[in-house]
Image (cartoon, rainbow, N blue to C red; front, side, top):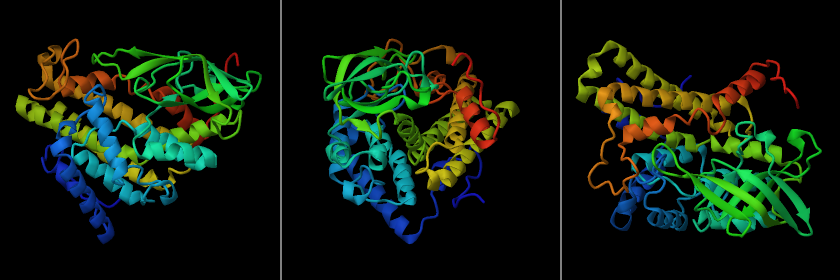
Length: 422
């Protein structure tokens, strides 16, 4: 049975943006009203400049103002809502977290700079960290004082996380780290990195890994930007050349980092996915309006593709809501099903937008007047940026091929993929 909620009347209906609120309980309705009012009041005046800033291909926008926004969220209790109250959160229910994410995107609030700390590392520490680690790191994350990046992927180990070769060797009371990470989001801004390292090279692949917390501001770390087709560089290569972190900065057990790393991946695909879906919905509305404006909405093939896009968005929403009660038990096939579906869907939406533009898709257009965005090497509009950035979405965060393997093995019970030469 699908979750509660209104159904939009058609993929071309401008009421789409208004009709998808959950049918809230009285308490949830009060929480929604509080969240909506706070966002309306604070995305004005001093913070009017950050409305809509950031996001894929635009993470360079208004960094200082968005950092101040992160601190404001923390100070006024709108960061880390789902964390337990003992660690500064509200202990918000799943429904309240969904409502906050919906209202946040609907208000055109800026893309979060603290999302990796709040959404990934924080829940991981609460579940697996020591009391000392929680006391040291959770408050600075919640208050927007420290930013984090994720040290998982490597040139030879992307979706195959167990193949990482970055090594950490214990010398006295410090871990010494040597290796390279790649596609590290916002590493150039981060204060800390949670790094999956190989601490026992003789152990089987999954059993010789540890999950370390590493300060970024030290001589042994070099961050090099990776420039994308969008002309921006929110991703980075990170080189560890004798970087150091204290011995107590292991989350979980030494050589037990595989389970901790999987837990983090599970949190990555939890409540925050509702916010992504609302952003996708806004893009679909842009594409639908483009079809009307160009007169191509009457083309039966393109209309069918628009209907398919809308149907896919509804499927993602319902499946995400259905899976939310299980997000504290990460590692199953549900997260892979979600990742496989949304990455493919968003890529298809980008392709549809280019087909609707026709020949105009081949010409880069200047940014909208007053957008405040610096002009990259070739200026883009939103639909061009969506198309270009979505090309990577079936690769990063676990490629489609890896997700299909996980689904086959964990959900369908198929034989595991042969580990040739391992």
